[in-house]
Image 1 (cartoon, rainbow, N blue to C red):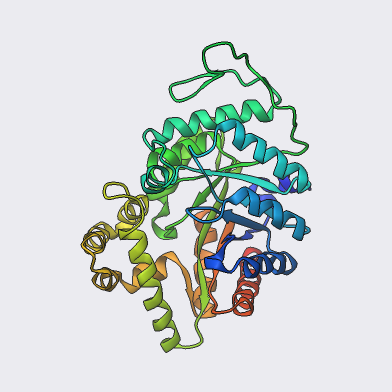
Image 2 (tube, rainbow, N blue to C red; image 1 turned 135 degrees about the vertical axis):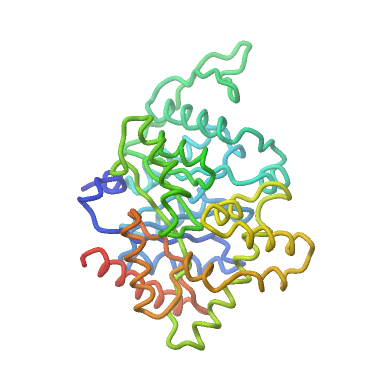
Length: 365
């Protein structure tokens, strides 16, 4: 099956897939990140998503990784909405797909006001409308049509002497479109118009009301079912040898989770905090954010419970991780995005290899 078709084949036709996410700079470890991607390809990882956030840009890194890998899919995880024109996104997608032999997945996300306005200096307002219109324009471009669009957010071409144009490049392969979504409205849009969902902050036992209800509403709008959407969920994976090492892992993760709940987004908008709130931790999430915004990072981390960490990650002993993977599969996850722990490249790769094997075991059990 061609790579692009396999990316969103019917659920019954495939086992749970494995993925990871990297940011090319890796905190200054550019070559180590490239080596990690290359070795992950050899381990049999199915997909590598490349983030950009406020670090390295995604398309440049994907082009480099495509030249160094042979088989796994490579996705923008995510290209941020609003910092490139829709036509520029389409140009990058076509280029990366054609150069990689059809291994490219286009992931888009709204990001948040801090990055979009604070770093790039463009408005964050109305992300839902901008996402819908961006996707519509991208699909015009990918279809080979002249880009002729008039909406609430975009007018192409601009009024004046310009006339509609089409891109001279054409995609030689299908380019599946994924949206990163946490809010109910963006989840509904994802179900309606996307081929896949890039999610996070996922608790399988609470995912029905928090996520899938909204995705299913969007799918129904377009006459589709869950089988038409690749559900891609991510979490840190780490294996503890004993109770002491598990306690240390959980404690370390609490600091990272406190940052997500309190430091991500802006003073008024934090989609991670809202996602945890919808899954049963509204009071704790609010208190963590309050302490973080007040500057007391240690107090914020102390409020995060063991349950919050263990419910939303793949951290634990091997039997614990296996059980969580089974819960993810029962909940409807198609692709597991693994963030392997490890203090060195070799350690990260050992964790990743172990996790890949567990996913494969879980998928065939």
